[in-house]
View 1 (cartoon, rainbow over the protein chains, first blue to last red):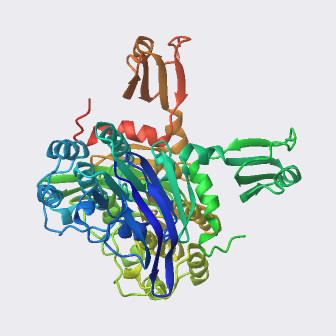
View 2 (spheres, one colour):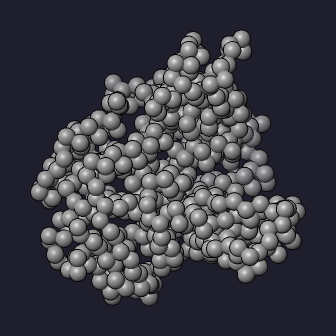
View 3 (cartoon, helix red, strand yellow):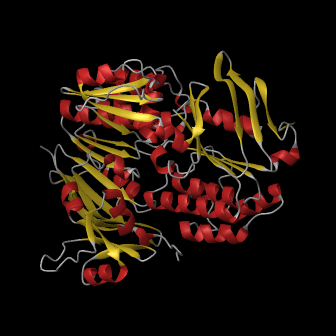
Length: 291
Length: 291
């Protein structure tokens, strides 16, 4: 089974280094989350992996072979990008046909079923559809091409709550029917926390977290209690953020707690969810001026 | 204080009746949520209220005066639309200036503060920004124009989790500083449930719910237990959806329960959140083919 390796990839746009020495691996048949702030470099990374753009240095390989100018490898990857690449006047059924031409085969049966479930007319022209329906057409194609690596860049942009639930269900069902590797890049972190096995967090061009989802949540804590008690308890721990409300303080920790430390009765220790962890971990990444 | 009234508004596009006899009112200084599936007619409704398009019949008035061709009224309303209306080459600072020209004044102090918090460069050209930053520029303008009615159509489209939190905070702070009426149309229902006082749900061109947020949640229930016990209990109640898992069944109810009815020990009654209610209420609205 094929494996993709991202090996010391950097990418500059002019003076701006958008990706800084990125390395990680994608295993076969696994669902990954790729999380990051707006502008963190997620789309650039996905574009490099699928050779839509090139790395300034470093390389991407599948089973030791470079992806660059390698048609066999590229035929095994599909990127559903946030950008709309289809001509405005192209009809949905023609988009499916085009996918078949590019990838050699296409699961029309599933595509028609999904089109019906999501309420997309096969004769509709792409340009006449709303943002939400653009996403829907693109994600149907992504689920029906015969590749082993599917990358979703903002798959649920503009989708209503019902359609988002339907997408997550269909993704899992498609994965069960034909296990392959999915990478989901999204801003709706809470909604995919149950779906992704492994999470990469990209922040300011660097991978700051690369771990199993459960392991990440196991190491994420909120310590709440009277200000002084909390500050005393947290000394030396990896505090990534805090909130105060009157006399109460919450410290957010990412990392192991100190088992030797006595926990006073006045403080409460809970796990925090993935979205909260993400927000605190990446908080400094834009030039906030906060009180 | 001004009040807006939507009075038996219908709108047809060809044979397709997108809005069907819509009536409701917007009070001064209140935050509303306008919820609906993709294609439910939300954007059409907001466009009619701000005279970007016209109703096929019915009317929109502010204090008994029609909004149509009434510059004084239109100067008191702002629509942040999902569509990008600014020229690609226009710089952010020019967009602020243009808003001042259109609306007579503009809160530059707040706009500069928000631009800094969200990390938007004033010299950036609109066309060079990502989807998320398009939304950010547009919502900054919406918060800084001197109007009493601000309509947001998908304000957080493409925003990362941190920026969404920041927007909700800034919206509430702006409301505190200068109370006015906000209408927020969004697919991220859970995130605005705490912010909006009153909710309209638009489904297939009709208003199906027009009520205070708390009143809606008070009337939304999930009844869970053994299949037969749940079905027996729910007879005659307004069941809007159900789920089964093994021998367990959950019925979702919207409406009052029957106080006379005995609740068996085996079933559990809980309130459901706004997003779940929305999903079940509007589930039939596209041509789903579900098992």
